[in-house]
Image: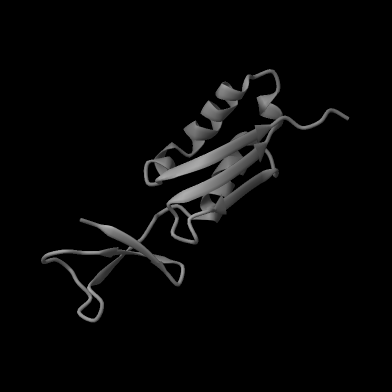
Amino acid sequence: MLLHHYFKNSCFQKLSGSGNLNSSFGLRVFSIAPTVESVKTKLMNALHTDEVEVEDTSGGCGSMYSISVESEQFRGLRTPKQHQMVAAVIEEDIKQWHGFTLKTRIPDTK
């Protein structure tokens, strides 16, 4: 059974049985590849917008995110298609997450 713990902005797995254990705590550090900045940069570049917010809602662990994107490229598209566009950009990152929330918006016309 794996138990996940959060400590000082890192994720740890508590291991049962043998394996690569830290002898003091019985913990192994594992990293979550995508960072808030890398996800934000991918979305900004792909959707040609500066209006991207990405927040790690897992307490720094990198397993849950809240994402908000405003892009002119969404104009004329229904919400499911907008969400598909965002998901396609960060598809590989999503595979490493437990989950995320997504909000998309179309800029107000001036």
